[in-house]
Length: 381
Ligand code: 1YM
Image (cartoon, rainbow, N blue to C red):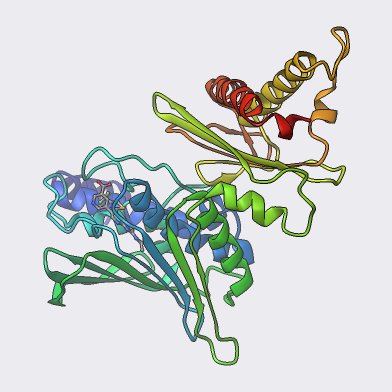
């Protein structure tokens, strides 16, 4: 067959919508396997762990939507991973556009997460935020079980392709999603998971999502471990935990929160008797080690409020000014903001660029910290 005939025959197939979407799916996931680093950052240990976080992010989104309060992450023998949640379960109904179960679309179409199925949007999300289909493309095999409508639905994949269509495999009286996958050794330099890395990350996610219980398990022989993280107080408890080996100079953690339009922000802080400052900031549950607008808004408000309070209680003379740095001496602070269109900037995307967040955090801290100092004068002195 001449080249143009191949092109023509493809064109004929493409006139059939189902075939056309199937070709796009395969091309999409093939692109992931060709350049995995573009989707998960790297194919080293960090990329391997990123697979877990992508699946967990979907469960956390379900928690943020208010339908899930328990997530488990298990390293199984053979370094496969199981993630479960007790949310609504990924939709299993047939999508009009594709004629396929939504579950299949979520796991086979690049960037499918959350754009359909009821106007939801992805709030949590890793640096690359690419979702379930990328994990699927980079897994030797992957199985999803959905508990929904009283039935257990199951579907299986290998390297992104469907190996078993969705079927009902049993009855259930609960709802939720369970995903088990084996990272493809053809794709990764290492395939051994580090329990501490996963445990640490999940503890951080539990601190950032108050009231969400996340449990981690290591079921590999000789390395058995189990941990359960649940923080009613969210980032307040994060600050207490960060200060555990320090000496706080006031009782209790100061907590401030607020929201405007689609964005929300919360700040927790406590001073200790050390000299260094520790500000740990997040946007959509993603760490922003280089700070950005949320940290700028916080620092500006903290300096302004402490200076005006100092003048008010005559600790400072009218012409005296305490520098921003001095205001942050001994400070331990966690800032967490959630917004729809986070702009991560800088070479390593480690900085939040949305300027409306600077205003939001500045307003919250200006207003609430001032009120706090008025009500707790002993803390200010
Ligand atoms: C262990 C991994 O993926 N949980 C999960 C995912 C979804 C839902 C619930 C869900 C979302 C929506 C409606 C909605 C997803 N659904 C989709 C899509 N856990 C895990 N739990 N009903 C259920 O967003 O409206 C993508 S992820 F797109 F199909 F809706």
